[in-house]
Length: 164
Image (cartoon, rainbow, N blue to C red; front, side, top):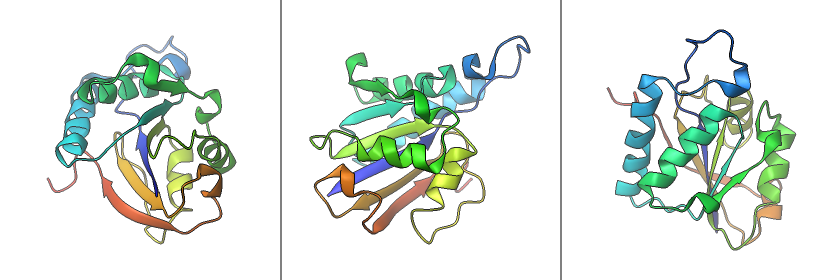
C-alpha cells in the first residue's frame, strides 16, 4: 500500500511587490500554521518517508518546516520543478516516478493545480484547497507507477481552520 499527502504550501506574503511569485516567502500566519499542521499529522501517527516539493520558496519552506517537526534531514527533500504551476499531468508524472521504497510521501505544491488534482482522485470535492491543507489518499499497490490506474481511497482531508 502507498500513501500520499498532498499539501498546499502555507500562507504566503504579498508584502514585497518586487518579488516574483516564485520567490514569495511565508507570512506570519503561514509560519504558524505549518508547524501546527505537521505536529497534528505526527501526533496522529501519520508516517512520511519522503518529502517532495515544488522549488518555489513558500512550498519549499513549508516542506522544510514539516521536515523539522518529523526530525528529517534536509537530504530527504526532493525538489521537482514541474510541481510549480503544475497541471494534473505534472502531478501524475511526479507521483508515478516516486521511488517504490518510499511508501508514505508528502508532496507540497500550489493552487490552482493542487485543487484541480485532488478533485480527480476521489468523489470528495474540494472547492479550494486551503493553504497548508492536507489531502491524503492511499492506493492498494506496492508500485507508484500504478497510481493513475488504481482506485484511490480518501484517508483524510485536514486544514488549519477545520473545526474552528
